[in-house]
Image (tube, rainbow, N blue to C red; front, side, top):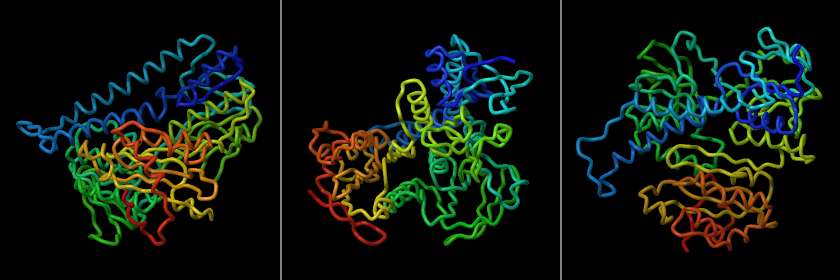
Length: 469
């Protein structure tokens, strides 16, 4: 029975850096991977999808060349096979590089296969039994397949199988109007497919403020994406190339016909076949491994990191899980999950960068808040680039002057938001950011301007327009 100081199950974003830190500290480590090195991000998430988003953006800008005074003869075409090949080359390079680095890491042994707990200290991988006093579960998640009548007889796609499409869909029906669904919907529309997004809620990305949701809906509709809201999916029918989604919506007919169906309604953790019961590890009602503020499970010596613990669903939260565990275990620190500020991005074009609370969330806390907002039509850098859709928004606590949250929906929004996030992390009052000189012309330079335009929120469903300066 091979004995190790630590066993890491899964090579998603938390696993490999943790293996390196543990080896550097002198521990003997085993890493188990059942399929593709790198987890969701490298294989079916961030890296391949953003590579495809980049291709879609290039096609979109090329079609708009005349807006910039540029003439393209012969029209703009999309070679979908070449798009997929480019995406796969980028993803493969990252996956292969990661695998090589782990297999060549002295003090680390890589096992190929599916890991299952035999006890709280034993992991079975094929014919091998690995024993360790420290076990780290980093198994990620997968697409949720909802219980829709007829789905068992209809071909459907998830974010994973979308990566292997050989031909461009004629008409893609996307069930789910949040991050994954909207990113795929816009990119495939720009590749040339008809796209319909079916969302059960009253608006897209419903957890964002209404004005942000409305702006996203507007620019997607401008590109020819059909959006059906308040949709109760009754069932699906049909076969390859001819699929019908039956839905009751506030507007439109009950039948939505298309060639391909993408399910983008959420994620579930890969925890059902790990033998967690044999180790006594607790899970919640959704299958996520229950962890404390330092990512420890209820069983001493077992931690859960990444998407499988329900404490974050992003690559950056997974990596931060590694940082928390490594700092606490190896550096004598006391870092906690609740210390981090929620931050994420939606990679439509334009992208949405988000940090902290929305206005609605902040107001629900009972705080007296001040809000600054500005449409991208009044951001010089966005106008110069010909990409003036979206808005900027920031929310502060009137009493403490703390920044509570911000949204930048516009060109470079995924980068500009870090100006706010970094100041929030220092717990500095908002005048510190307001008085900082920023570079012109940029999108981020308008963040101090937003803070100079703070005003009490407007009551009602839709906040008022930005004030002039």
